Length: 158
Image 1: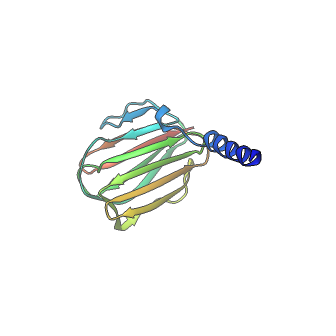
Image 2: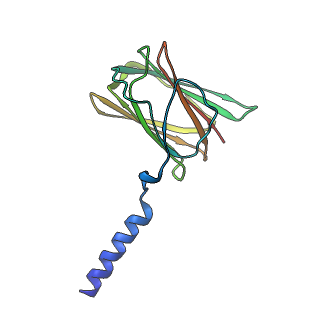
Image 3: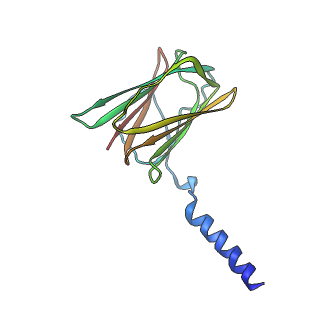
């Protein structure tokens, strides 16, 4: 009985020590203007836009002078779909959920990146596309979107 209690207590404590409490994260609404406020963690969302869209491409540009990299998700529509995401400092990852979005037929992505190690896409079902951006090092990000055409912009810096 005592061993069962110790095993139970250890499993509860180890789960709590390694999990993230998203309720303590800052929640930020992404706007259509660059803020130049760089964050290393937190939850972000674009509001309740119900636009159905396709992700057309991802492109990037690295600026050596400022050591910043701009990552742009291009959509086929004039506005972006509803997006929820989480920037995780400890994991060096950004998670992005795009609602009513699919991966376009002629989807294009970029090659080598200074700050991004990889980008993986996970079509959850026909109404959601998830992405996981893995960075080489800890980064700070500024996130905003643009219209006509719809673009979701991530400015990352070391």
